[in-house]
Amino acid sequence: MLPLVAASYLLARPEARYGWLGAHVVPASPAVEWIGVLLTAAGVAVALWARWHLGANWSGVVTLKEGHELIRTGPYRTIRHPIYTGILLALFGTAVAMGEMRGLLAVAIAWLSFYWKARREESFLTQEFGEKFEAHAKQTGMFLPKIVSG
Image (cartoon, rainbow, N blue to C red; front, side):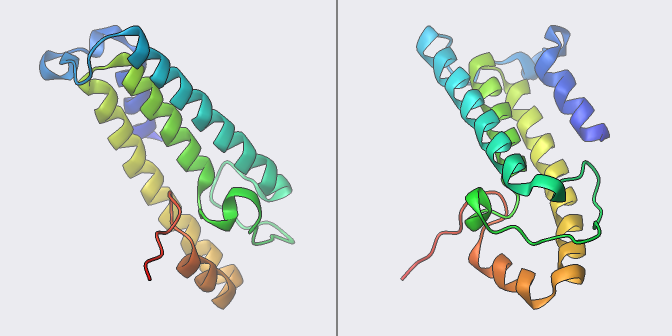
C-alpha cells in the first residue's frame, strides 16, 4: 500500500515537483492533455470491465473465497490482471496529461507494486487451480495480452 501512496503523492501534489521530478517529458499542449484524458478514461473503462467480469470473486486483498472460480471471460481471456492494467493505463494517462517526470515515476512505482501483488495472487491461484491456472498463465500475459509468434 505504501508504494501506491507514494505514487499518488507524486501525481496529486504540485509540491512534488522537486528538481528533476518537475521536468517536462512531453510537450505541454491541449492535444497532449486530451490524449492523457482519453488514456485515463480508457484505463478506468478496462478496470471496470474487468471488475464486472470478476463478480463475487473480487476481493481487495489477496485471498481465496469459498467457491472461488477461475475467470477466463472478457479481458481475462487475454490478460491475467486486467484491473491492474486498467489502473496503470489510467495512471499513465494522468502522467501524460501532467507531462512531468514525476508522473512517469509514479506509474513505475505503481507498476512495481502491482507486479508484486500479482505474483502473490498467482501463487494463491496456482494453489487453488493447479494445472488449470498454469495453462491459463501460459496463454495470457500478466498485464498485457501475450504476443504469440509463429
